[in-house]
Image 1 (cartoon, rainbow, N blue to C red):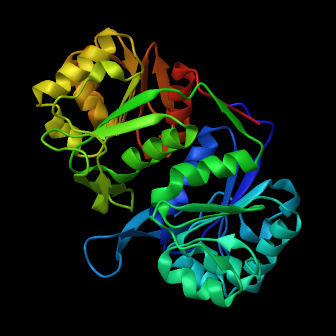
Image 2 (cartoon, helix red, strand yellow; image 1 turned 90 degrees about the vertical axis):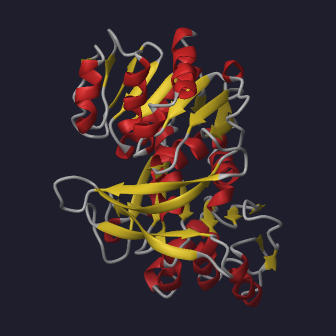
Length: 390
């Protein structure tokens, strides 16, 4: 459950911003009860920004591929800075050109002059440098941005890991999206937020080609609250990775698929003690098709449901619930193409209209697709007794 006293945040977007670095804070903050407006110079509410997936694949620098399309919900030219309590700047390639925009520079300076929290990640710090905000300030960033920040007069903090974060006054900086849990946590604190009830252990059932957002957004959002979150996959161990899939709607009769980030697992599947966790999360994508055939996966799901512990499943994840035989007499939703599985398993189908609608039935939270993450996460928080108050 999220409790907020009208906190509002601005997300400064641009084409080919990093996919995670836009959507994770955007949906996490909304789930916590914060209003978030996403804007981009030259664009209006309803327009999209292309995103980029940056990942380290063993080369001398990160790779890039196309990510999701990110829909803006506000218009840059209509911004009233007085209504916002903080600013978030994603990284990626967008900051390279946004930093040259005088309107962007002026906007960021106004947040700084008002001493409102500014949270910037990865290459986003190029914008802070261009606006003249880093002189004499401690900050970190993606390592390649270091020389620019030093030239701009910053007190450069070399990131010991790509999860590093630094706070100096009202400016919060992070090296990459790997630092999102601390980055978002620090931003919530700077907004005056207080989290209670987060001493929970949560398990994610992962698989190859699960949907990229549907694992990363709830995973990092729950970590940012202070929960202990583990991700496991059959036949894999801690430190291994699962490739993910980007599912999006781009004008075809069904969703498109592109390669997503590689998602790193945090625990071993073999020898897993499922009873030590307080809740279970099942991402969607294509992974549930084969995970539903795994006897141990089915046993884990049955164990959580029998214990009446919270289970949150999204999109195609309900294929696993159906295979486990735990939907009889329950009310739930899913991605519309999974309706057949849900109804044949004896559940009452709840139409996801609009597509971001989620439902809670007893200990079960279900969602239709990643646009519903704010509801999906907040409903799971409510079952776990987690609150964010401002």
